[in-house]
View 1: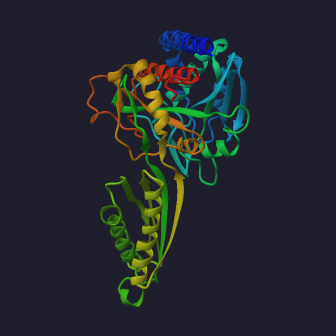
View 2 (view 1 turned 180 degrees about the vertical axis):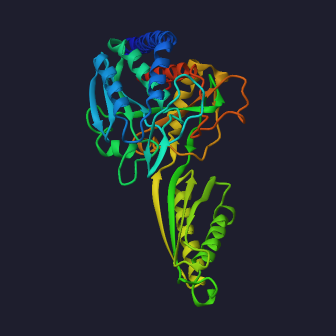
View 3 (view 1 turned 45 degrees about the vertical axis):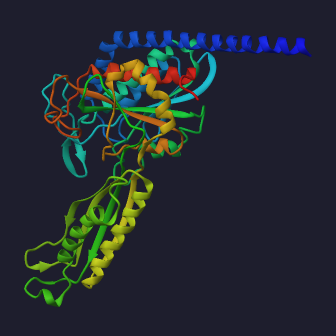
Length: 445
């Protein structure tokens, strides 16, 4: 018995050492792959810029990204991937199966542009025009989706070049309609999920996504565990009164006055009716329509606005209070208020455990001083729909030229939107590092 115990005492540490050696070798190989990926990102920069400028000169609105999708699909096919097209209208998915077993990682980029007329004086400025909601408008990549697409195409090329060394599968998701589908259509992440992007074929266990930020300095990566971007909902309030001559308002019920009181009442929801210290929230009225003539009090007024929140609980609470505020104010004047709320996008919620696990990867890849924890922002992203199904991490990549004051940098969704194209290297290095380190099990507890 003593000899057996002695053997066990010496055998166990040897087994553990061998196990650690095997793991160390794997991680060492992964580090070499990452270094190779970063070198390729630097080398590919001219090609990535060329892709981005081509997409920028040829922007396409939501659910109409046919030319963009065709170029993406052709590129993925040339890389030898299994390619699926026509998902959620124009979405493209490329599947890269590595030479070794391992997890399935999804990477996502959006492709659609906006109905914005470009003012930026660059040689590749968009001159494209179209009709949108009955108005002639310009089309512009005023949110960086052209660069997102180019970055993911480059990431696909780099990882495809090391296919035999990949310990897992990568699912490249090129998504249409992130900005919202045209009236009467479905689109975006929710439709891609509905059409099986997370369930059919290899099922990803995690998803990563990036977004350029024109007001954060180039070279930075911004992250936040938990809610990083707000939910976005649209509310519509139809106030019905009784039409009457403007000279005799007492003979009718004035929906304009009632609507004014409702708008004022809505401002008390965030300031007085919810615990704002728990979660930030926004209720904004963006449109009021009613009346056709100065001396006619109309029968009906339409109010529309947006709701932003950082938790499902706050989101639901605000919905209830909007309905109560509008209906009770209308009732007090003898009018009625019909309230409808459309949920557009949930909270973009970074899985805390995944964020914690991948933070060292970001710091190693980009530099500890360049990886910055940000405050939550009240804009929304439909990447959130993927995060409702599987753990996801969404990051911002700085796109503002070095030395510029963020207060003077053009904002997203504006005619002057501009990014420093060197930011795309940071994005590519981030995506490749996240993929390789996750596959290698770095940071796994």
